[in-house]
Amino acid sequence: MPQLIDRTHTEEHVDHRAELNLSDGQLLDSYSDSVISATERVTPSVVNIEVETADGKHGSGSGFVFTPDGFILTNSHVVHKASKIVAGLSDGRRFAADLVGEDPEADLAVIRIDAPGIQPVILGDSRKIRPGQIAIAIGNPFGFQCTVTAGVVSALGRSMRSQSGRLIDDIIQTDAALNPGNSGGPLLNSRGEVIGVNTAVILPAQGICFAIAINTAKFVAGKLIRDGKIERSFIGIAGQMTTIPRRLVRHHGLTVESGVLAASVEGGSPADIAGIRSGDVIVGFEGHPIASVDDLHRHLTDEVAGKPVAITVLRHTEKVVRYVIPSASRK
Image (cartoon, rainbow, N blue to C red):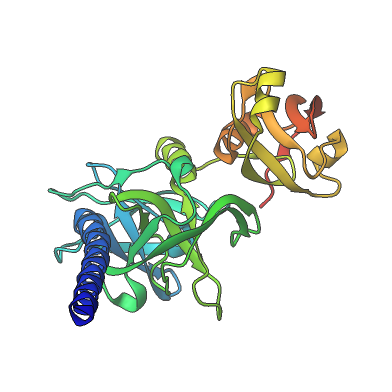
């Protein structure tokens, strides 16, 4: 009897482990299926961008079709000063591309091709991103077309400087591997929606890569398509989105539950002169609610440069209004 009991216990233990291993396998298959599905959905929209400058220099990068009529989003540094642009699709077709407009300060650009049968991506909402979720990057590193890497969203609300020297806010950090040539390609969630535009990698570090949030890209792309350029004003803060405690939302009757944290304030800047301090949370701009960095950027246009604007901030538990005179954006 003792031997029978021991054997039964062992069999139950083996069956339980087999069951656990099966579950692990199913989880891995589910992860793989998500990456495969997202990749297959977006790959036809990813383009390999080849450029030539007036002085004969060549370069390359990535981009993705985001409208049915051939508008392509990429990085400004990929196409800057290009005299000739060629976009290659995953099906092997190649088309001459025209530069619609670029914004070096956000490192974004829009080009356009005249091509039949193209498939645009689905643009997601970067406000819904959470650290730890799946992040999939597609691009053309070193000319290897439609290379896929996967990882997670490592952090949100990072800031980095563009080649123009401007601080780009609300950057997504990911460990999905990027290499030269990935610039301008899409960063996807598990549903195949574009949540960012891949833009930079820190060398020689491993697993520290950055993408411009897609909500920022939507705003910039719309301006570039309409005007060919984007003008901004400048107040001098490095900002990131932050959640506001519910008690403060209720106490002050706010219509937003998040705002823009002034992580740092540049000395002598319009914000500094007006008395905005590091640690203040911007929640309003001329009576308009501010819930994110994108909201703030939409209001910091060239139209408000040189004019006093009322900026509402939360300072600890108090609501304070400061009148700031934005200056023209610096190059």
